[in-house]
Length: 361
View 1: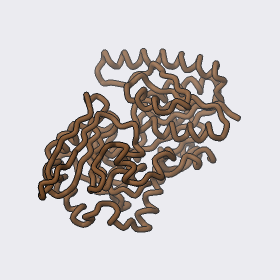
View 2: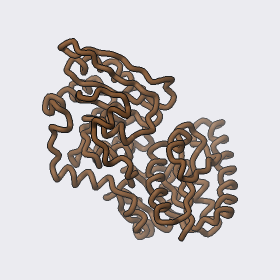
View 3: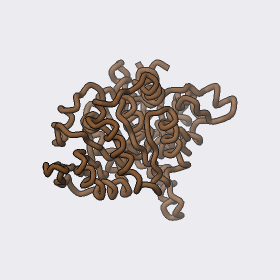
View 4: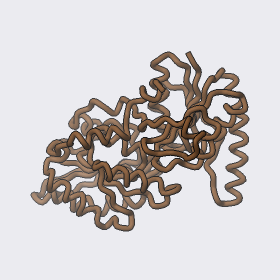
């Protein structure tokens, strides 16, 4: 049995695939420790996974600000030293970098110590850390159809989809809504801006819920981890029925949140797209316009090209309400009334799969 360190902190898009791989490794008897950042999102997510060992490291994200860049460089050096000590102490055989700034010190530490290195990238445009660290890796996992260029990197590349946590499967819609205290028997739109939240989507949700309610549609919006509290806002249907709309700061129960939705309006993070696709939940994607290297637009464009999502640019967010209502006019009972074609189901599984495939490779 091997001992693995999985560097995956910083965002939900890095930590969730890391958890999926860690759970599969642990189930097979391997030793496993997750290397996370000191950010609130990491602590919030890991509270749910008490059975997985995790260690915060001192790495901070990069910045173009000269002073903050110095802080980034200093933190990376301290994290590198910490990773050297951890890899020796834990007798780690292999480091798996899931992308992001926490992967950098862990992978360099593994390289210095002569450990095996695996890199995984979920996005359609590989991030800076992936491009930097790929040259040190023994294996590079990339999405289908994506390459880093060069024969040496191509020889090390294996194409796999986003590894998903098995927990998201197998929950009926009513149970999911009961868990989150949502409207039970009403089509529901879930608005999800990612672990950090999205001001543009939050503002749209607050402005749109009354119109949605008038058409008999409830709304649940996850505002982001920095929001203060859960809020219930009551709207009215056209027949005068009260409709409860839920605005919550953060949701660590993604299984219930996804399975409660008839339609998801969200950013275009690779993990969110993959989880919704695997559950055959329709999506309207609003890619974050300032995402590094435009990777969210690339993710969204790909999802739209294989028929599992509609894309609305943030500059056209005023059109979002019409698009949502048009979906429910075609599917008045929500997802239950929508027929997911075999092509769409097959396409969904191009971007989402169990972690076993990665472990097998």
